[in-house]
Amino acid sequence: MEQARQKQKKYYDRSTKERPILENLIYYQDKPGTRWKKGKIVKSLNDRSYLIQTEEGKTLRRNKQFLKRRREEIDIETNIENDIGTNEEQDRVQQHATLVVPIPPNNRISLQNRPHRTIKKNPKYFGPQFVNS
Image (cartoon, rainbow, N blue to C red; front, top):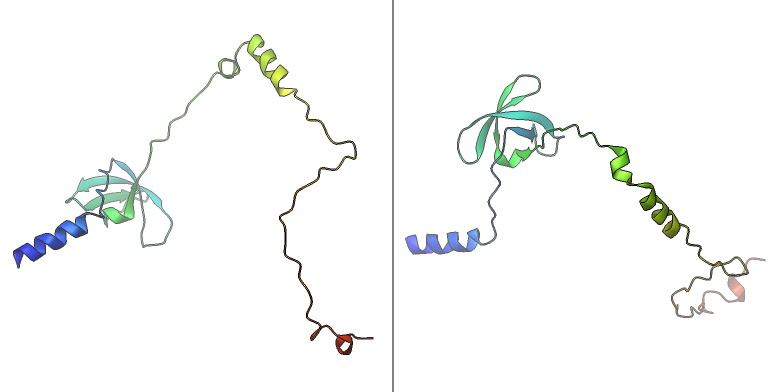
């Protein structure tokens, strides 16, 4: 009996994956299918269950299935001049950007359509007796 149980566990575990260890900041769901809300982990009760604190101050117990990681919100200030580069780099970019694509003289671009089979109307249904005059 124990061998059968071990064999079944082996085959079941082949398709499973480890859930990541959650950090302090998380999103949680009240019920499956509802919107994710912000929260913080207060305490890990076991591998799957956590006590979390909501933004409203409530303490809830949630399974790992209803929690997901949340990245810290960081304000990043960038120097726009450093991102753009020097004037020489800008001139080089502008030279490459002014490429002109020739347009055919008739101002129409022909599009190649896929070939279709010829559809013949059945004379049985489109004969003279069905034409409204």
